[in-house]
Length: 425
Image 1 (cartoon, one colour):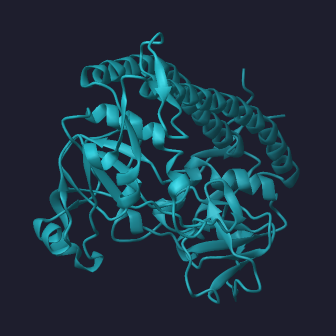
Image 2: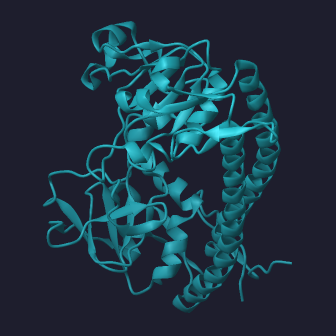
């Protein structure tokens, strides 16, 4: 049974609604000071503000030419991204450095423990309160500046109790994180099993007793002797697209025509797209409509994106980073989709360009070798793959639900301890 404090007092704010009687409830401005000093990233190493905390600038971070206009960060400062589309990106900085001007940097007073602040101001309920104080026109551009947030009230126990709370949460969150990591390892192993099943069935077939022959392709190895190997261009056609000019948002976007980007590819089926373009955007940008059941491949984006795939279940236009493979009558679209999953690591062997920005082209995709069983055998293989991976997906779904529950438990535990609903000593 959890412990609680003997007495609580009500507050005049929505969060927290009550606090232990001997805790203070103070405005942020009384225990933090905004750090506004502008510095250059040449003198203060650039940092990224992420949902995992403050880290050296990520390779994927958006870069600007204005490196001389950044905010100084000192080790021990609390940094939070002000924009609502970056909700949850915050933490105590373990490093000196600099961050984008869209972030707010706070220097802690000596009444605060760094670790306690880290737990208090990154928990879900404070983040919701933080963005409730923001201002803006649309949700994804909503931002909360220091002038907005300085009036937010936060609970502050004694410094010794803050340290005790942080130490307790260190232990509990480590236990939860270890549990979550083990479950994530299980999911990764199950996904590897799925991929192994696809690889085996898509290249070897169902009949283990059939005679095999050398495919003549190093990375393909032996295949059933009655199968053929074709260049993709002989059994399918490829298409790509373009991007309507972003400055003409009223004329080119918010239309009714589906439009696929490489970031939309989900290694699964695509039934709908978040961005749609107009007929004018389609015509004037030379986008092409591709038929449903086309197989989509990401051509740009490095090792993490190249080869991402999806099977398109609706008609759609594409951007220039996506290649659509439109199968002929010789090859089943779902067989081709699973074959594209087998090819995922192979594409990097053929990638061109700089190491940090490799890409594959339609020409490369057209030349790739594809195994071609008889059509009825393709259908049987697809059926077997679906049956086997469906069983694994059931297990994955169950484990994912366990992870979601433990993440909710972690958030709830932190929120209740830092606001005094649970007493830890």
